Length: 463
Image 1: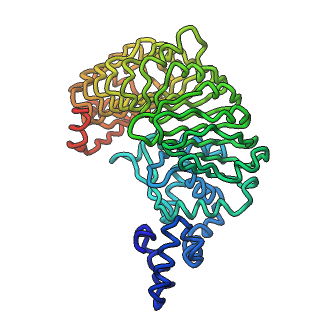
Image 2 (image 1 turned 90 degrees about the horizontal axis):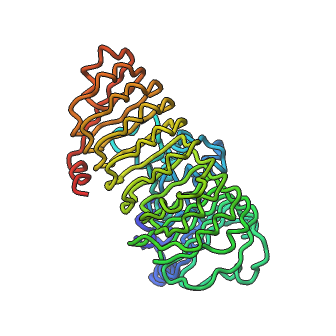
Image 3 (image 1 turned 180 degrees about the vertical axis):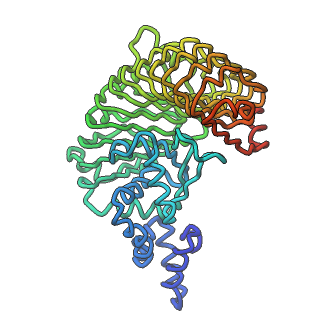
């Protein structure tokens, strides 16, 4: 029974109280019902009422309640990226694109023990990139509660719809009523590695956020998404051991209103070119993807995402170099290239990104220097080169960054001195003791030296 309660103290207390002084047969019957997959909330209403009290207490924070219910759209026992949540909440609830409000709501839910918020590193007060490395964990019973509360209305009327496919068993309602449209705004489809059937048609004209959770070695996007004209956010995440080979990616070119696309742990073929045809795409995230030279091939000779303002590339281990064509993204405001251990240099064309305000190069361990053209980034406010272990010097042009406010450079062990041009910087918050020498010259300098984790640094070196 403890296993059925998944170790949740409140569940153990409530179920234990309901079975106290009951017969052995009652215990066995209860255990059998739970073991067969029936919801523990269907079995024990007092537990539901007890847990629901915490959610009902959010009546004065309706958006926070919605945010809690949205967590049921992600897989059980998996970490949820705060950045992935932000993508959805920006669209559905008009939360700020900077991530500040996303963390605010996550902290609120965490304070009520409805989730666990894990902050990034020891310096969690950074002024930019609030969601980039934070993630959320949720107890299985709280996830089940979120799903239970989201499933009270008929399927066609639910605001959130979670479809879980095991093997080739398609939900009965999907088979029997394929022509009936559903009005959901958030659609989450999870399937295991055994699924091999052809997708049934699904009409969801109002869906704005689509979350595809996959575990198979190969995955073809469902053909029905071509009719999701209102889709704003598409999140495709593979939870398998190896990146999932993604097919039918060309279907995304049929999504005229897509604003945010997040691909995680998938293998991309040259069909990635379809992404460049998304004229209204504002943010593209490639996390732990197998890319090879597909990105470079799709850029050559093709117009590139005219409205993209944010590009995030993280832990894409086989991306040998950053395509120079990315520097033609005229409207780019944020560029994040992190945990990229093969990157040795950046193109001088980087200086053409005249609208760039945020440049994150965290943990690019082989990056040996910054391009001299960085001085042309006159809109740059935030620069993160922390844990770039191979950087030994900064270019003199760093002093031309008149708008720079934050420079994160902790963990740059090869950097022993700074160029004298740094005295031209104003209002800069630093994260290195090297700046102590210039403290008297920079009136508004704030030095924040972060305590380093030697084991973490060693792991970054051997990676």
